[in-house]
Image (cartoon, one colour):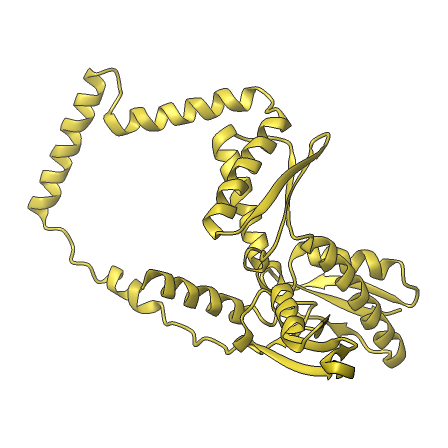
Length: 302
């Protein structure tokens, strides 16, 4: 039962993010295979979704040859179906309930004040160490001690690799986890098969995993000066190539029409790729506008 609910939540998350790729509706992904089924499986693996969540068009079917053998390859294109917008939840009711709590009576307020005075007196008599405050001070002192010494980037890398090893096992996939280091720049790469679920549509799951790894390393080792990045199934490389092509298409459209074009909201990393590409193209310029998570790139004719 729990497994079924988890699958439903994963499917719902992928569908909710179906408008997040390439600055607009999901682009068509074209794949080939010996059969239509094989080409479809490859498309699903690249998109990280299930078959009932995609639109599929058959571009070319393998042809029947002599003696029952087939000639040529099957070629299809697929994209994620548009996501349904979830209705907004009125959260004011919870706040209203909090604001309507009954006020404390004078007697209960007096008893509470007396309890606080006794607790303060007890802490002073024991050297100012209450049970809860002692634990908090201990953690704070540990952080201060850690922050005094620079953290070895190798330790950060080991912590990240250990985290990703455990995460791949939790996802139930077979994958290799490797650490690549250049001074204080660290990149942990995960390669294997059936990694689409760990990437998520538009890389949203990958971004969340990267944030988790950074937080885990910081809590374990304290603040550090390393730059840590996670890449799964070479998604970032493929994503950059796709965004570069998308930026060039938008630039051509802006130059032809002479009108500015605002793309759909993107992450800061994706926006940077667009700005870098557009800066090298004559006749257009770009800037970001709005606030996260709705911040987007505006491409303007010069």
